[in-house]
Length: 82
Ligand SMILES: [Zn+2]
Image (cartoon, rainbow, N blue to C red; front, top):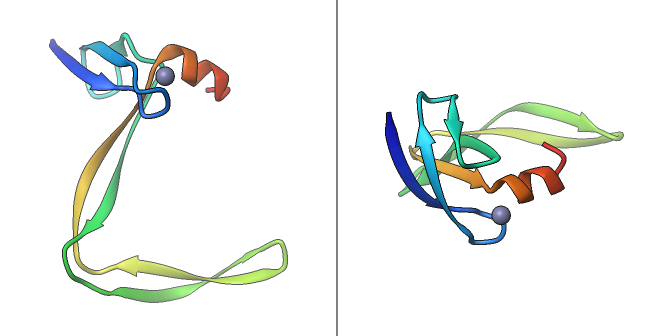
């Protein structure tokens, strides 16, 4: 078990989170992780996607990435309908 101190991404409230595992935690409403591109690199077009009749390119980042945590407090998560 781990105690994490994080900030709610939406309202900036400080969260004290009891982490039991990667998906099991108490003290926050919503949590996810995603990767963001860092440093230098290129986007490679891998195809297209059709959204409401418009074609958009699908791209893949070829450079380095960094994992980012996204936290919301219980109130913000509830307001967002999570
Ligand atoms: Zn919040």
